[in-house]
Image (cartoon, rainbow, N blue to C red; front, side, top):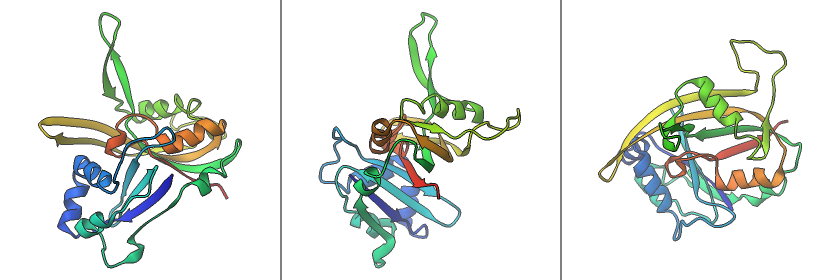
Length: 223
């Protein structure tokens, strides 16, 4: 597995096109791999962290990508440190139960509607912060971690060390199909409870819409 980073130059027209379309960025990310197919151990995951003046792309993948085409389209092609890759095993091998990490995740929190006949209906995006937070809390055990609890409680704030931000409604076209996605970014502190499940989450992602910048969980040790 490899962990890659890339910094866009928002002033370039190519960057503006990619940053405005998850579908175009999805295609550009996959173009960095001779074979972007998923394996038993991992798949191509990516996330765009976009602030007022900086747009950074993070990628986790089974093989090492070549992002030269991205640099030429919308990056800093003459700056050697504007993108790069490194083996991910160095972090994965250090993961152990009871370790604490700061984490960041952009996800597509959804629920399946129930039809009148009791069958599962189409997935619908969660709308409120409380719903989106609960979506992640409901999945923490199966993904091998527990989000830290905060001391005390109150009706006006979460009992957990997680912040939901950058909540967006993305609307774009994939060929002739209109795609609508609700996304939310999560930041907080977690503790590893099941090393194997947690490593799988780092390599295979969490939730739906992984092809459109959702599902990549990144962590940093709590110092």
